[in-house]
Image (cartoon, rainbow, N blue to C red):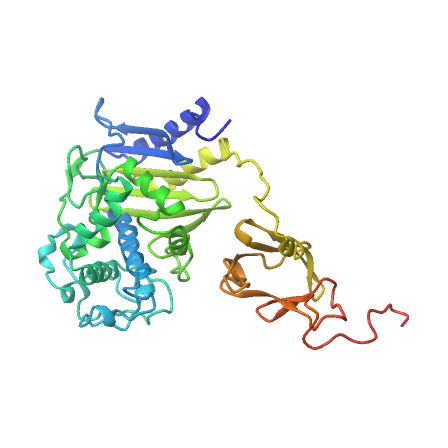
Length: 459
């Protein structure tokens, strides 16, 4: 069995039950969901308060702050093209904002210290023309916290990033988005303005089963923080890209960089942390990535799990009620637990490098024992063989060293240190010496090794 085969009947019923319960208990006018596995839509389902009018994978809903992830991708493209550095202060590219000392990285990860919302009136329910200038978005006191000291979610921060994109591209944010992300990924049903078929936004009275239409304003300068409309089908395409990358848009290494935590979470606000335009949460031993979104009349969540290769989207047209984040996480979990990913067949490396092969096996950092394994493309993996320790994968560099890719040794250099006769003396990893024997007396170990050698209690 492969993951491209249809889901089992029991799995499909569990998914439908979760969606039906969410729509009923959340009192949502409608709710649509879909699950993707191995890059293919494995299931979709919907419920509606009007019989025969359930939304489907082509029905647009407003996705709110999921828009921020698209804006973050545009900024990362600018970085990859060398047009900016993530550590650049905003002032370098977008002068005169009053918040120019914050960096692009801090804006992406919500650690710039900017306010969460704009000055009154409530920006989500007022026309964007109410705030024609960035000063109207930021107000008289843009910075509410010291920049870089922690996570504080900021909608105006993503307005600044959208304006940064427009400044460096010389085009409107929406046009850059369409050309650089939506067209290459085939997301033709993701648009700044609604296009039929689309859901209408509703508020449900908290104490009575009655409805109130919600306005759908053009957000103007705030568009990069929450303007977009999309479908379950399009958002699952986006999830596949965020998990694997696409050279037409952003490389696998750059989307992996987006998925890494960028700042500690804000106390009491997140169950996890935040990367660069992506929420990062832990749920039942899984790392879920994606984003939630809400605007008056709409709720949305996209989650994906790289390890399980499963993604889920839930969209609803209610201001409050259905917990789309929890529902999307549950749908992902139902599939991943009931029908776990079938691993690819093991295959040997295409060729043998005897010199690298000789480096594999056990190594000792002092008395800690580690195993070094050879990976594809001359990569290496170091992991403890006894008890806890610092595992890491390493990428081969052109100069014969390796660069750490994750964990404690991310960015650190692993190199082979040779004796005068050319034989391997030890491995140097960030100044730590790894030898073939614990504190090998024949190895140049910093601090030396006691000449008396190992001894028992009687000696």
